[in-house]
Length: 246
Image (cartoon, rainbow, N blue to C red; front, side, top):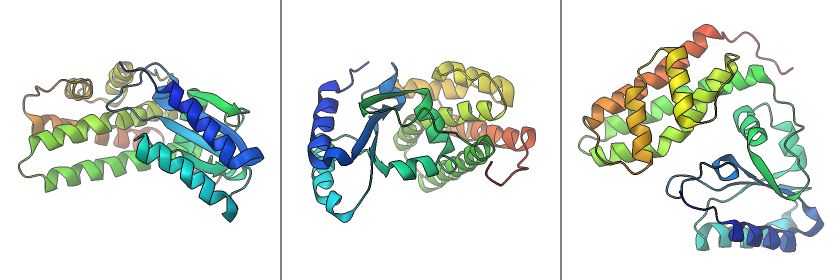
């Protein structure tokens, strides 16, 4: 388990404050880096930078900071939004907002995340959309990879955290008390949605450095089958009835 780049985070906050001044409302660390399951090779340092406004004169200084962060430090660039955009986008970024609320640390300014109301009917729609989009992408990878088991292993290793996040949110959409641990999410989801969890456990092991996988393509198919089972189960158990915001 690797340590988070805490010293770099403070440097980022300092540089953002210098570049943005009073326009900087908040800097928020969220996701695995705000919990205890950060993994150096596969986890991203997820950051949200909230500004009062995004007028043209803000871009040059902000671009310099983000260029340093993403190109020199090789870290994922932050999401940059205005406070108004953040408050208005909880309906279309419902998964992301719930996860930010569930695991975040405010590095600068006030907590702008916790008080935002997330419309759960639209959360359910986003969960199914993302599950089905992920399935289509995985299927495309397989169809375009005729001879490349190592590439398929990498695709699974890099996607499994996002997939398990979607499984957790599918459980939330069903009203389940969804756990946060990846192995626990997998176990609970396999019981609720009725898929074989064993192949996905081997995918999780890939993420943590395991290289030996018997029948890579068989595991890949089982991985896609599990995603389809969750998407289908969600569609059956929580039908899409409400399309308006409330």
